[in-house]
Image (cartoon, rainbow, N blue to C red; front, side):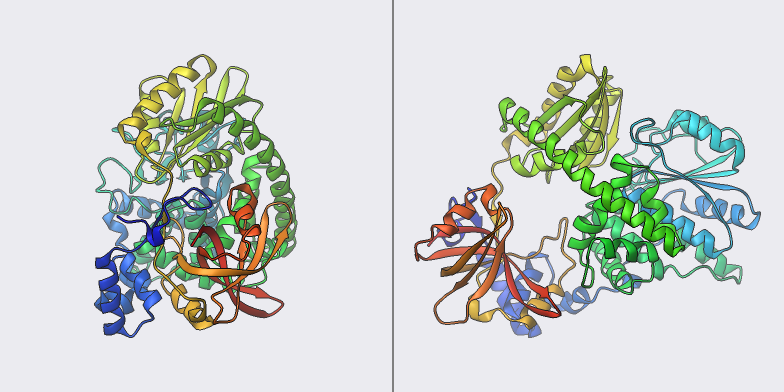
Length: 580
């Protein structure tokens, strides 16, 4: 395909691609049939939406998209055992992972149980002392005092720990890749079990928990009883879906869209307190969930007390919520400082090893296990390759990996664990965790690279910048941006649409801090549009824009409304530029 606007190598070194001739034709036909703006029609065509489906896509209804919970194996026995424990006033324990998905999953259960007049014990393992997932001492201890243990966002591979829970029933509600055999639990509800068809494999754990609660409420209705309001809990599902980088397609899109509306009501005091310390001054968007709220909820599990995030999300005590939010905010600041140090060291090491291999990896002594996943994500973004970062404490290293589209990292790491090159490992397509002995590190990473190369990881080139079409500055209005946002929410697997502004000129530039740039641009016929380029001086974009010399440029980025002091105006979040 010919490069869009002829841009073979932009300021950031990327090739621009745009809609095909066929996509242009379909977008024009959609505009004629639906009366929608051409820019929105282009976005819908890129999403594979037909004209007759446009109205339903733009207003997704959860009741139309929510799958039947019973479509998942073990769902009915899981829900029935859960309700029996509630009716019989049995002691229930919730064993959750320490990330946002685990914390949100736990908070869903605790909130539902509290509404039914039932409390439960929350147990979240310490990342450093206990590692990910159930462990035998913790499960044995919980089993002594509880009749039912719910493992959320974990447990699918925990054969030994679940067997250790003698005397208690264990129900697993998870989404991580399953092995050929399941642990000895009463029920394992997981769309990524090997005997599932994978149609719901994009759900995060909180969505699996939500479906179990939907089934529990349905069983209650059959008995003439009423369960808690589940729609009011969708703020937790939305937070988990975005923070766990689940694809925003199908039912996930509907869950997040509705969950954002619930969150905007600010009824959950924990999220309200967290939004206040994060200085959120507008209705939440996926950006807020992924970059403001999610990292703060995660901060407890990364470098503080593992249960802080889940406690914040579940609390009904205003003073506790404020205290927890402030503690998590402080931990998040500390986490960023630790992350920056590890990131710099990991990037230098990985660069020395080479960025063109099928796997980019780095390992170091004393690297905090709470930040290796974030640093792996940074390596992946910088290289467009699967990345693994490992922190060693003595002879044992704990690491995290992040993958790119089309490469199943979780399956490869699970294979390594089965082959004995890892002490343990697992995850899903885009993210995984592992534990490795120091003397097996090089062999394990070499083997992992080979497995990823078989999937084509060594043939991935620099990421093209995919553009949805052209816009002229005069077409950019509040109403156009609001129309485009109807195709959202945007996120993983549903990127915000990007448009190119051809042959415009920079009217002014102003550097913000060390790396960001604010500017204006115009085609000479319409008022100038404001733009912001974050991280512009981390690559070649900032220098090109500052040295524009009045020459024409093609600019590319995402449109948004910039809210400031109660007012809003159109703005381009500038991502790339090229000489025209």
